[in-house]
Each structure stands twice: as C-alpha cells, then as structure tokens.
Length: 277
Image 1 (spheres, rainbow, N blue to C red):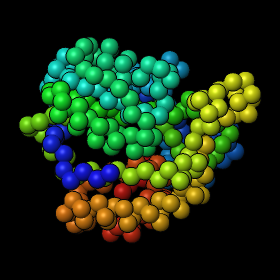
Image 2 (image 1 turned 180 degrees about the vertical axis):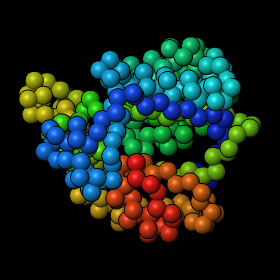
Image 3 (image 1 turned 90 degrees about the horizontal axis):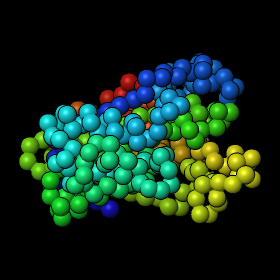
C-alpha cells in the first residue's frame, strides 16, 4: 500500500533503552564467536538488553512519556495509542492496553500492530484512520524485547538484536508533516524470519520447548540476498513517488542491525554511508 501524503505531523519524539550494555564478548561466548567475528560480520560492537523484570510495556511506557514531554502534551489528551511490537508482554491483552493504563490515557483507544521490523511504519498508517474518526493527538510506539526470544547458541541471530523503544506523538497542526509512506509485504518469504511455536499453528507446549521452537529464527543468507537485491530499488521507487532526490536526503535511518550489509545497500543508493552502530 502506498499513501501519497498523510494528514498529520510529528509533534514530539521519545526513546528508551535498557541500562544493561551487552558486549560482543558476552553475547558471543555461548554462540562460539568472538568480538572480532561479530564486528567483521555485522559492524555491531554492543547492544542493550532488558533487565530480568522489564517487559516490552515497560520500555514502551518510558519512551511514550518522553515523547509526550517532547510534545508538551498530557496523556489525557491522547485519542489513540498504537504499540508496534512482535514481542508483546502476553499474547492477550494487547501491550497497548498496559501502556494506556500506566500513562493514564483514559480516553485513548489502544491496540497493537505486529509487522515485525516494519511495525512502526504500519502503525503510522493505521493511526491516520483513528485520528480521522476520533480527532486529537495519537501516540505511536515501537517497542521490542528480543533478548527473551533469542537462542543463546544461535550466532546467526543472538549477536544482532537488542531491546528498546521509540515513540512519536502525532497530530494536526505544528510539527513536521509525514510527507510520504509506502508499505510492502512479501508473504511468500514469511518463512525466512519466524518464531515457530507459540501461536495457534503450533502451541508452545513441552515438545516445542524441548525442540527450541520458541526461539526467533532467521535464514540470514536469504534475508541478506533479499535486502541487497530488492531494497535499493524499493527505496529509489519511494523517493521518486515522494518527489525527493537522493541528494536531498539529510538523515537515513534504516531498520537493519547489520552495518556491513547496509554499506552495500547505501552504496547502491548513492547516499552517505551511515556509521555502524
């Protein structure tokens, strides 16, 4: 789905990351790799992981409060809260319900969106229809605690992912308007990234746990092939639709942990190479 321009703007932003810093040596040891291997393959040097008592909603609430403060708004003014997450506190109720209660946003409709890495963008699209019907500002939060679903022995995944949350307050009037939005889904590739157990297809019972099917899995080789083959053209198409030249771009914020992969993609786009995180 492509939207030629949205009717609202960004009124405030916020973010939160857990205090715990996890080094490459710490995360790599159970997976049989070291700092040099992780840095060479990914460009990553460290990541943040949630404390044992922290859930996704805890991170989301902290980021949401920061965004509301940035916007100069109280939670009571919110008409909607959308939490984009693929690691909810529980299968039910939506994590957004916990966020709504803790923020005190009693008038806000609250629901979750699960589009994994693209969740925040899908939430941006979803919230426009809510704003059109209910008016008032909305809070969109992207939050995940991936450290809880990573196999410590799987070097393909455990070295890549961290935990954190980012939030936007959206509404009419002042603020930077969302100029263009493009959404894509490639259902034929759904098997490349998945958590096999825990849903109606395969309940997370004892047999699934024994087989390690509760963990996040990814075919990294095929994901990289897709990103390198398809993403540059999709971004170029997006810029054309938005009427923006590559030279006009001042900030490029990709949702991709692997900095080495990004170098090859950004080179194709003729954009400045972003620093590795």
